Image (cartoon, rainbow, N blue to C red; front, side, top):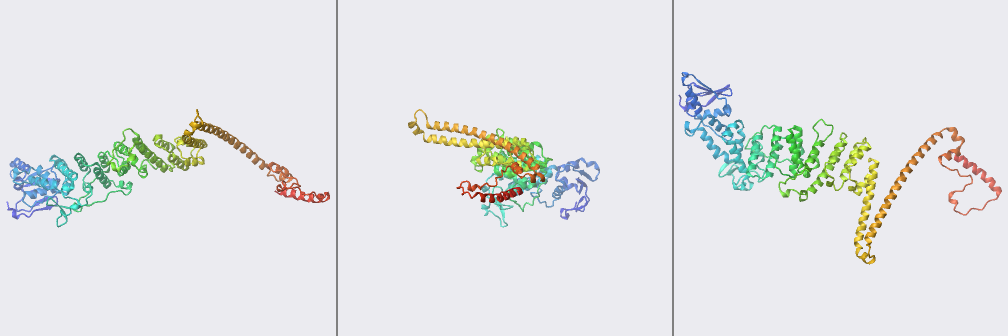
Length: 633
């Protein structure tokens, strides 16, 4: 065999690799269709697996030994590194290939038993002394373990990487002097961070607690899921986990940022990493991420969950994932906003928005045991923590939601009613918002019958309408007459209740004087009793007046129809010319006699009578002129 100094490496010809040596090859190793034409001695002295195969093939009479490594981890590129090591060429182990080489060395049994300082011990030393102590290298090694994940799991390489990363995230960075901006003095001349005197190759980043979000987002879904679970076991704060999950989802779910209102996290790039994003199946990602979400609530987290609900409906993930996301939103619905609730309908339905999803979320909110702790006490308004205040906020939110979707012409009345009745009456102190929503719905659906309108209006408690709402409803021609009458009745009832309250206040003020001036009977009780009697009487009078008004309207309609018939009959020319007084009488006019005086003169002193002869001459022309004028009218 030629000395090693004459070797100049390997060359490739098609799918075959040859060693640049003067001796012909006597062993051929085939991996994934790529053939390596090598020599037995360098491989046998380093690889236990190949040495055993050589021992078993000694009876081949010097023929070339052919081996097919079907289950070799790492592929042809990794075996080329192994071949270079066996021939004594320089091999560079980095964070990108150390896990692959480690698994290949374990597969080929390249232990120190077959050579001092063999490849397995070299890989193990680099992995434990350098890779696990460096954030960047640990991320790179973990990402590169995907092709050999099963053997890396067997060798506990993945678990060690996950544990090291979790430790560096959960530990105060000030203990390391890295990677906080305030420790910029621990910096190499080239600008990289020095950690325990070792050049990490990473650049100094900001002192924010989310410095690691972008780095771990390059991991695959399975590795990211395992890393988050490891961090949970380490006791990392839930808000940090939620931030990492939100960053990861926004990176691989492109449609999610569309509903985040510009609240997406900042893009962080690490030039020294040169990582490529993982290939992610969005449905698998969403179904896996849902199990990692912490049982906490917060404003931005609630908005993020509603974005996940939209994406889940688009991707049509499994029903368990959808139900869990809707339940999580329902347990913090009081923190939602109107624009985040406007979930488009992605099914074949004619409606614009998915009202069934919102209705399910409201039912989850009303279900017992729906309380959920916040990420931090300071992040939630103390008034919102009470169940009654939460119910009022949700009721106001749902009323605004109904008003927003009411303009949809394809929205059925049953959807509106089910949404309005999803919350109990106690959650609404005022029904003005619900009345406004129904009024918008009636305006957009003028073809609804009075019965359908009355059915929807039955969800309104008229006693909880403000005076302004009552005044608007009493003049709203879109409401049925029965509803208007009910509004008027309760408006009067509210007014009388207010008057009774004034009487009670007056009773409290004059109570001491009443004990002196009217012993045996309090003046307040007299006032309250008389006031109540007055109210009852006024109510009865109001009912009678309304009945009279209704009957009078009927009479006027009958008279109007008669007048129209008479006017039609008077359109004939012969009758209008022949009998002007009859026309005037039918219309309702009473023609005055020719010698009638103006109305303004009736109250004055009568003028002195002229001589009889002059009266005869003047009255005749005056009478004829008056009659001609009336006949032309």
